[in-house]
Length: 153
View 1 (cartoon, rainbow, N blue to C red):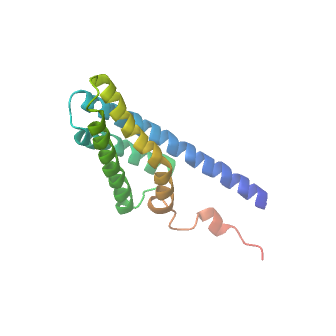
View 2 (tube, rainbow, N blue to C red):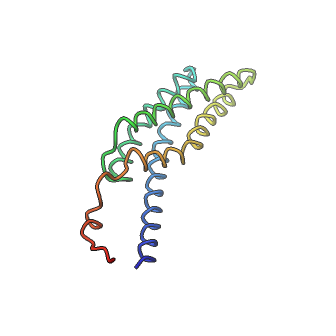
View 3 (tube, rainbow, N blue to C red):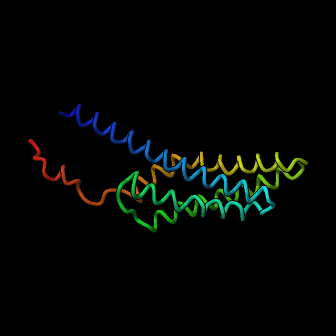
């Protein structure tokens, strides 16, 4: 029975990870497009980061809440995590924007700064999963199936 439980938990965690990954991919595509378009048309990197963050945060929260974890989460920890991520992305893209200024090609500048935005969220991907799983969407009550299952002593 214990092996079955471990196998179930492994499949359950793998499914959770897959749903989180899919949600993140959708939010990333939306966010990346928003960033690239804003930056391409001359928006400052910090403003493009903000627009991209707003574009991605809504689908990310809704997908994670309803589909990945299937429950509402704690809004304050979620807000702190995503705002901190946005601040980190804004700093990274602003630094990248500063570093690419000597490059004459606007297309290369856009590609490199947009890449820095993507790289920031790629690095934060695992950190955010752990924080969402442990803080934001953590179960607060025992699973009803576990509560009904007698424990052999």
